[in-house]
Image (cartoon, rainbow, N blue to C red; front, top):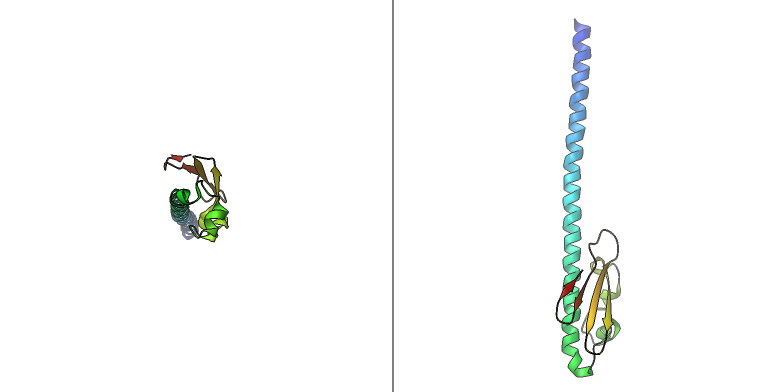
Length: 128
């Protein structure tokens, strides 16, 4: 009888240990997923802010130059931070396509974890 109880107890202990490991793993996965989502969201919000700054700088400086400026020219004018050229900054790489009367600012994630690529035109329309 003692041997039977001992083997049943060992089996019960193993089942409890497995359930504990599964619960801890699941909770860890939920926490990691929320952290990743929050991090990705912060990165995307920072990118949107930078794109809006570039757009505002373009609108303010066009009357002075009679045209829209490149990112390098905006940096030279101190209208935007030179940090924007660093792909690690905000987790995105930024580029501006310019024509005589229009511009399109592109924000492309530096890695798969940063978020989604998007663009904004001179009117403030966001395109994905």
